[in-house]
Length: 290
Image (cartoon, rainbow, N blue to C red; front, side):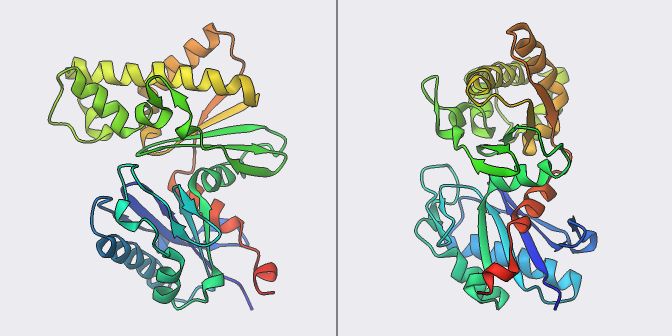
């Protein structure tokens, strides 16, 4: 029997779900569903929105999937499927909840067929499939949070550098949507609630321009510190903020070059599909059925 996997990428303000063609390592296009999520809503509102997206993707495909693979932000107990997210400006209402059982019940799957993977690991595993397998890759996702992972010799692991010390707090306090918008507001800016809108105002809003320049400076300092330790030959930048890469990555590359930091910076090519494919790639039906 052919094993089929429904994959999902849970972000800080969205969920994207799709059925994965495991043989060809590709998302089945007509099954792709993306929904916005209010990360500050009640637990039932959040989980109902998540499961509605999963059901919609499976129904769009028209068949039942055998497994569910979910790319999930941390902190999260990936083995038990329990949310440990608290104080991260998202999903506080889910703290301590068994998300695996909720998904298993909704999708009518055995709990052991519902798998979770750290979102940075899933993203990098998906993107690395298009790179040289001998590359040592430092993956960074910029969005509601700051994700980080390392791909080396075919293995990928979460680095959790968003929680590393940085300036007066941790890196995620600055290099994230909230960090950029907080800096923008500290300059006296207002009426902008997301980075996409901020970028749209760059050409006629000097405060927005300063905020993006500050992101570049923070990212340079962050990358400089960790590239020295990790020694990657490639850095891949992903996440929703990376969609605005042309406004800040050229400056990041220029300053890193001036500092003598030897690395190639690439922009993620696969978008949210990278995390979906990456999460699905960890599914091993033979092992999971034992």
